[in-house]
Amino acid sequence: MSVNQTDIDDFIDVWNRYDPNGNGTINCHEFEKFVAELARTPTKLIANKKRILKSVTRRRMFIADLEIPSHNSFSDFLFVDVLMCMSRLIVESDYVRHDLLEHKLLLKDKAK
Image (cartoon, rainbow, N blue to C red; front, top):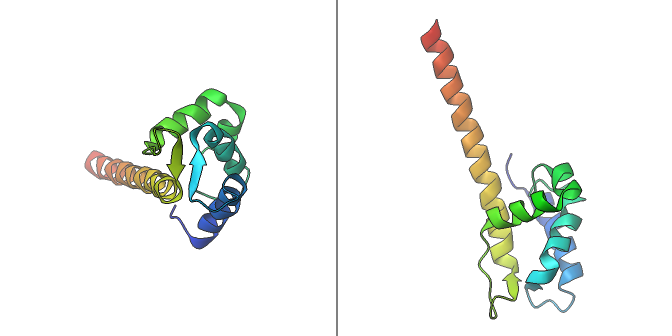
């Protein structure tokens, strides 16, 4: 699963609701709401959307896994940082999935 322009457009649409002045930042305290709202869109930037929407714990684990740097005395996240971290998480999970599939195929070939 790769990130495409539609995913980025969904991200931008939701981001704009939390950054109406166009500062390029979201307050850290609003970020969980942002993630929940983004999970309600078609974007592929969030995997396991149903779990993230259903469980506060899973949503917070997802946010922690993003490892987004904070700014302004730990009060804000930057647009570019959030988009990059979400994209990185998708690419990393795809790589791991691909790597596991290759490993599984190699094991099958060895078993023959």
